[in-house]
Image 1: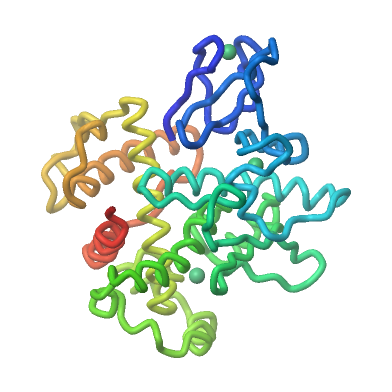
Image 2: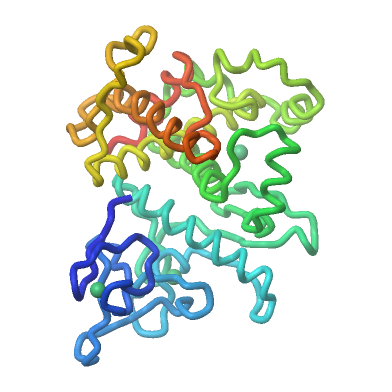
Amino acid sequence: MQPFACGNCRSLTFFGDLSCLACGSDLGFERAAGRLVARDRAGEAAWTPCANRELIGCDWLAPAAGALCGSCGLTRTRPADGQDADIAAWRVVEACKRQLLVDLDGLGWTLAGPPAGDSPLRFDLLSSAYEPIVTGRDGDVITVDLAEGFDPHREALRVQLGEPYRTVLGHLRHEVGHWFRDLLGRQGRLEEFPAVFGDDTTDYAAALREHYAGTDDGSWRRQYVSHYAAAHPAEDWAESFAHYLHVRAVLDTARAWGTTVDGPAAGTGIAGRAALSCDPRLPVRHFDDLVSRWLPLTFALNAVNRSMGRDDLYPFVLAPPVLRKLELVHRALAR
Ligand SMILES: [Zn+2]
Ligand SMILES: [Zn+2]
Ligand SMILES: [Zn+2]
């Protein structure tokens, strides 16, 4: 995500900022223009914040006064007023959903909620505190367990499942991948799917039962980006799709900040690849351009995270078969 300039004083501001730290102006994100607009204090210009601005801190502007923005408008079910814990989690999920939509906008796949848009995709945000809820996608509806927006719950699950990475944004990138599998398939963009991912019409429920009953011997690493990806070709696609969005988003951010990698002196290169340097500002012509920038950048950013005692930014290995899967995602999404 690129940084922004305050629409009033031009100070540095960030995606999601509701106000400018320098001049105090209220800020609203104008999605079509990709800019943070400052509220005109004289009240002369139209200022149409999302109807959810006060409730969950949505900073997007809406098509009309009192309306929901194009992101909140995609949410079909949300917590009832007064359910404070659920509303706090809803705030987290919506912030990640806005990031997801900007990811997709940047790839030319704009999903806009009513009344401005006609995307069939909808979100049900429900809490497993009251009934069994599984985060997943069914047809045109993505269901998110709001408990995932609660850090202790999500982190406990991550540890229990032995996952190196678990975030709400990661869930959304994964689930929208399932939805894109159908959409891209209908558009004839995924004819190579069986050759790359395998047959995803095989018994899904049985495959998942087998996956959760089995033990993790690590052998999946040679072919899959995550252990869960090995469960079924449909999950392999969704995981690969999510990772493609991870790669694009981080490289876009690095490009916007002019973050380049040059070195280090130690080490002569990555096995099979030439350089430990990259410049994400160079144009992307082929999928290989992404890969050759991604690897040095993640090595550097992982090292930066470790120097703060944090987990790796990108705790995954992209084996050659995984790169072929990401490459298919790349080509299928190309507009
Ligand atoms: Zn300002
Ligand atoms: Zn909104
Ligand atoms: Zn899935």
